[in-house]
Amino acid sequence: MSLLPRIDRNEALQLLLDGELLQLGGRADNIRRRLHPEGLVTFVVDRNVNYTNICESRCSFCAFYRDKQAEDAYILSNDLIYQKIAELVEQGGTQLLMQGGLNPELKIEYFEQLFREIKARFPSVRNHSLSPAEVTCIASNSGLDLNQTLARLKAAGLDSIPGGGAEILVDEVRSSISPKKIGWRQWGEVMLKAAVIGMPTTATMMFGSNEKPEDIVEHLFRVRELQDSGGSFTAFIPWTYQPGNTELGGTTATGVDYLKVLALSRIVLDNIHNIQASWVTQGAKMAQVALFFGANDLGGTMLEENVVAAAGCSFRMSRDEMIKLIQGAGFRAAQRTTTYSIVQEFAV
Image 1: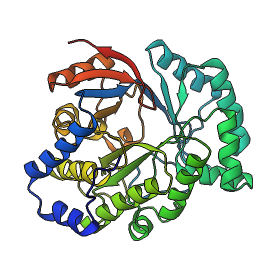
Image 2 (image 1 turned 90 degrees about the horizontal axis):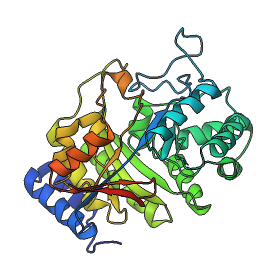
Image 3 (image 1 turned 135 degrees about the vertical axis):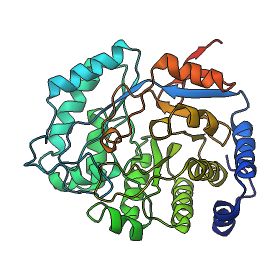
């Protein structure tokens, strides 16, 4: 799928530092038009179920995690999880995104039992859950290697793995904001091993914390190189750090910063078909603008989301609002599955 000639790290850094915003956006938009000439913008009806907020990683940029002894620490009951998924199905949802803290008490048997029951009760729902850090934590808690862990999770009903926990795939940055989380090579290892056994994945980037422009570029090229090495990334999702209620604090990236990084993502990642705009952190209006800066997908409607909301960022959008937003920007709207099959296209 590569749109040759490929740009290199030096050119990418120059574009990020010195590129004029509208020229950068136009270049990304041209690539988007070539890859998606039908003018279709997609979304998925999904729900984030954050099954536990107990986390031993304690990342400084995260406002969601709790220590085990905290008054508001929790592990959701299975019945409550099933109730949340039933509500998703009632609203025509097709994707479940279960993510939580790195809880040392949850071993693979917990996830196997839960995932089997979810698949039995809700066969139409795609289980797009856990991050590489969670998979690694489950393996460690259970005395298993990654191959064993991924094979057992897949057999129990895990369909695909989202790219959460990528932050910036540069260990110097990771060690400063999330020193207890896996390094970038381990993140990539989980994704490549998942691809080997036929599991689709996605990749993300959280930027705007304390990384340098060079780190953003390095992240993009490491994602591109992982995909070249056999990765199964169906989409890339860059989003901005939200400082509210976090230990790290600071300020969030500007809208211009977001659009430049989004456009650069589309230009660099010539081997990933879909670029997703993050309306969850940017809001609806910026998401519309993003569709002219390389994005062709608006992600999920997210009937529920707690991690970003814990940092004080709580945009919400219904399916009808998503359709109107896409059509209002001049595109055709379509609901998709996790793997980008079209469920339904909506007439203007």
